[in-house]
Image 1: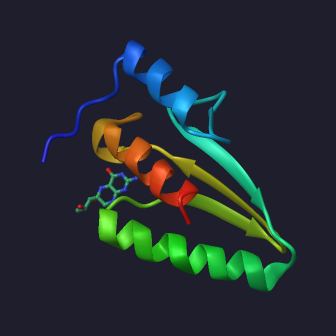
Image 2: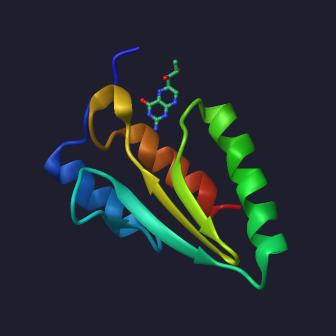
Length: 95
Ligand SMILES: C[C@H](O)[C@H](O)[C@H]1CNC2=NC(N)=NC(=O)C2=N1
């Protein structure tokens, strides 16, 4: 399915609505860092995000160090930010 990149105006609208997410400085992606009480909490969060990713068929680029999870979202099929990233960020924020 062809996925379209977000337009400039769409980006501005969505970014203001996505609490905690910001534009990556070096590429067309949004990112957010999550800090938890400990590794176990971080791992539980990652497990839930993994299930979301499968359900959305939209997968994060992420890293985990102990209690910190860094997530970047971009749409490889669109070579940049698309509506799918926005939907995924909203779903992650709702966890
Ligand atoms: C075949 C499968 O539907 C595609 O490769 C999906 C999988 N997950 C994906 N995740 C992300 N972030 N971008 C994509 O373009 C993408 N495409």
